[in-house]
Image (cartoon, rainbow, N blue to C red; front, side, top):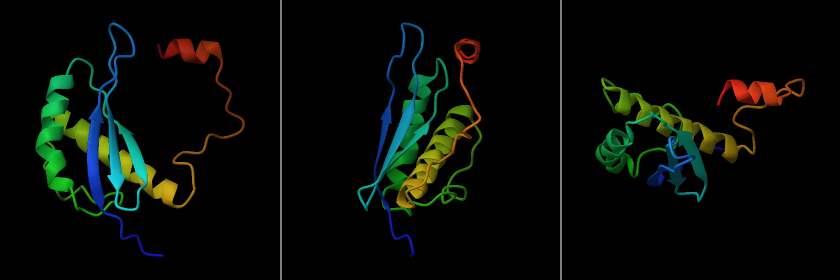
Length: 122
């Protein structure tokens, strides 16, 4: 079945996870009603990420909502641009997985996260 979804809306959110940490997420709403999420965290550069999204986002409204469709649209020179384009592509991959009722990245059953693993990444 062909995918005729197009990008209807793009939203950037920057929640404060702690007093020192902010994460950055991009949500892509498709014409089908599906929503995909990507992550663009770039510590301390939230203003630059917002500026890039304001520059890039409007150009994508109405574009195909399919993974890899952004590669030819942007010259990625600066880190904030790379982070936003990467997050948008992640969100489009998430949309594609949701359309197929699949997980974006299945976690093998043998993987066990312990508190020690989690502490390594704090």
